Image 1: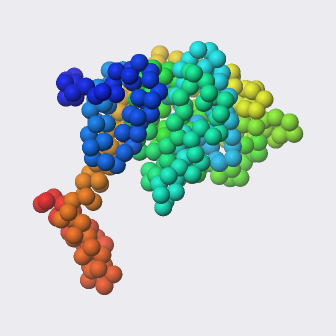
Image 2 (image 1 turned 135 degrees about the vertical axis):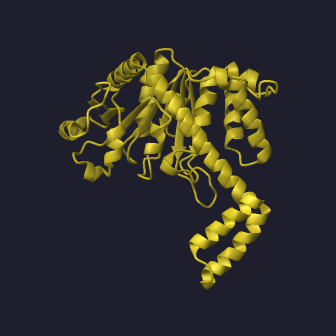
Image 3 (image 1 turned 90 degrees about the horizontal axis):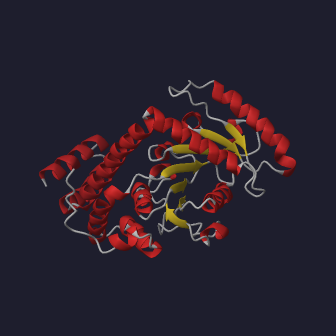
Length: 330
């Protein structure tokens, strides 16, 4: 396939491919920027790295706030870097609607992992994207892959917006739960449980062990109600304690087993192809929306339509159609 950007190599490309962290951070910043000039640069860079992507294992870690996602990711990341693997961590934080900035800050919750040479941690504000997944997460994953990271861990917000979005960009979806039985207590939606490739009861330590085992039995029973998967995979329900480091090895073994099963059946490659299509459609939708609201003719009309709607001179459907017609002509 011909790459239209091949003749225009970006200056960040060489250091990025050599694993330079500063180049990786600057590349992701270009991707996240709202400036048109930066978006143009990012497009060129993304075109340059296409042949260097797709070689990692992409894992999403989801769960309600307070379940211990960050501590678990740090424990898993330390296990993997201890095995000599390069690990990229993309954490999507809740954002301030006023400033768009990240509330929780960068790297503050994974101090031990962030000081490890083989790990890279990037915190991104979720901004207006649904599902707790930043709009540019797909691109950030590819940039990390181009920089040589073998495992990409994605931590989602876990606030119940539409967590299923992350499922369309990873190879393995891990759902973390607290030691307490009952998905109605933990606010877990059925749809999320259906797509989870494994469930993990975190914080299974000390006095919480009996509760964790009870929750484990509850979720095992709940998963039996779901339709069995074509590839024969039955999502396991595991116990772990990030603080004590127990159960971490077991979950990584499950991830490797699942990925091997997917690769053998051909589902791995098919899923990756479908993810590319989903990403393209998502990007196209965002680009169209941006072009629509930036069009000067549309901008002027929208102010007029707001007045007409508030006065009762036009319905929302009529106003929408007029705006679309104007955009098409423009």
